[in-house]
Amino acid sequence: MADASPDADDAMPAGPARADPPFDAPDLSGSTAFVTGTTRGIGKRIALTLAEHGCNVVSTGKTAEPGGDLPGTIHTTAEQCEERGVDAHAIQLDVRDEDAVEAAVEEAIDEFGTIDIVINNASAIQLANVADLPAGRFDLLTDVNVRGTYLVSRAFLPHLREQDGGWILTNAPPVTMDRAPGKAAYAWSKLGMSFVTLSLAEELAADGIGCNTFWPVTAVDTRATRYFGLGTEDDWRTPHVLADAVISILARDPAEYTGHSAYDEDLLRAAGASDADLSAYNLTEGDPAPTSAQMFDAEYSRE
Image (cartoon, rainbow, N blue to C red; front, top):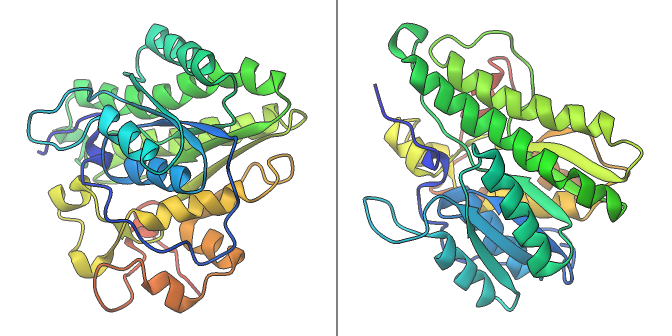
């Protein structure tokens, strides 16, 4: 049984810089995003892409000092955001800790005055049968994924309401299943992230706050993908595909676009991306299978 860690989904480098996304991207100058799990992989790429479009970034995660087996720190990500011409601030954060979350939110608001975008990306992963997964691991998945999303989102509600709008976006799949043999705890925790976010969409419908989830159709190249053997490079796309999907959401009006669980391909196509544009995210030649979508919807098809 493989180990899980709160940063497991974000444990590969963010990948190289790339051309502008294949659609008219918004100018996010003057906006500030609070992103969880930015030390590596998907979270880091989201932070850097936001910065490339003018958005200030609050970089948060557990890794504040270099060392160990995994590259990256929240400070490195913040520095790389600043190299892209924006302001950035790093805050060490365990999203399971309510007091730490509330303090981080207060610090971020004190630093920038306004936070417009909240992105729940921090996540733990472990794939195992119920019989093989200890209760402590179940608690870890639940605490990082569901509780973390709940605490971070909840802590920002007074601020977002006061400023009459903003975004809460969560890296989690559509809720389409009632069982997940071989990955019940992980599926429960990821679907719980969606459940919290979509419930907020209803609760905040009158506040101009867009609450949505985003999820990749294909597997994305992260340490977790490699560690758990979820295909090969022929099956993966770079983290840029999710980062660009997030940017496409931010081009919309949060008061109008809320309560959606969207796949990255659908978001990018709606923004104007072509098949050729999508293939630019692939690690190798060919069309990666929709394995990430099918992890939570066995009947998913692109057709």
